[in-house]
Image (cartoon, rainbow over all chains, first blue to last red; front, side, top):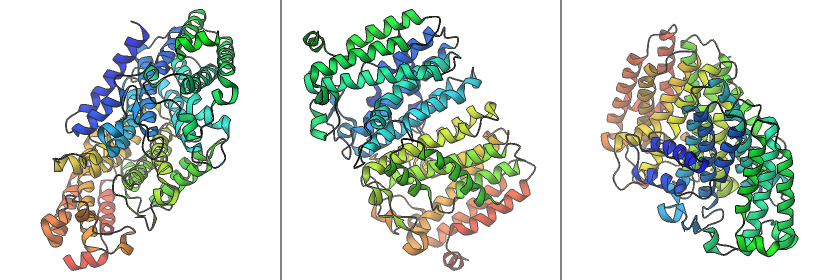
Length: 289
Length: 289
């Protein structure tokens, strides 16, 4: 089964628990809408690719880790789109959750997705309880304080932003969780896998900055030009598009070098390079070639 | 050490992790403000009372469970007070979090508190990893979907509310988690402890309805008359104040009968009765005597 199919199945299994007896139907629907259909599912697929490279012996646990990370990503998108933050109208090619279901259900959908992420990790992790504490820590670190996604979003409320802290928390943390959780779910020590996730996360952030400047809304399913409109730091503004594409390539080269020793190291490197091709629309890659 | 001191110490320990290197200072401050100073801390103290009645053998784990439940309670208050929900101006005798720190930090403080609750459970639970899966499940169920606090708040967005589902999710679930997690942290089977928590939770909800009608804002640290203003179901409106007080006493009587067999059963019953005296200001209790 390919990683995309595994990811969708794991998410479908996780979300099924939302519809239990006595569930308020509006929130259940808003949660599904937040998760399906998805985007590229790049974080959970990275998690599964690392687990495979580490010769995963507990695929159900790797699936749970991957689903948990994607649920947290979806939660962060829903809250980030709220009127008090980006006030975004479109996400993944359709109206954002608060426009479709109202602001209250958008707040609650984000909350419930965070809870579901931890429940999913534990529900499918019962076969290997000794690996759970590390997994919960990895996942928690990547979304909470002091250096997870919530911390990253909170830097947007500070008069003076520490750029490295901001980008590492807002984007890098969940990519680091993807590689670390993939390794930990397979029984590997997670620490050595942090760097790989952080490098890929930084590359992805640079690609996102480039897309925001150079792509069209149709190509990426959300409005473009938001970084400039919101006064956000952007590699594309700092380095120009060609400079940013060069930086992206450098980061990916570093990432490839960073892959820790594991049985499937070569395959993992090839997968990362192939995936990275899809960070940017082909016309931008051609332009910068 | 009494339960209040244990609760405050456990919360202080949990919150200390929020200030790690690279933490955005505004969010760190908003999180502290959301948790300290607290209210009666009734849920974590109930959790600890049950753990003691079950002859707790892992007090650090019971502390973690208690702190986790209170952090989730604080998260729910912060999000429930947001402009899109109750738009509350006061909480625990001071401006609500979104008034003090802005709406964005209030959303993020709630998010970060949910994450911290799960991290706390696992951080202090490393000594007894075999008890963690049950604890994470108990805590998750009480705040997520289909029947936790988020589900309870979501019923407020439905045109037609199933009253039992609403109250059980919005108030009962976290009380049930308190008794169940207290038992599970001490190595007891949590299932038999659900009923006790649900009965105390329902009693507390009735007391809250009465306070909203009969107390003053100074007495309870938040505005009164909100249930009527927001069109919420209320036992005090349905049964009148004296009828609601009678119902409260009946529920507490049932709760006392429900306490499962355990070494400290008699002490736990006495504690519950003593605590329940404080559900209502003395003048209301006198009036209904």
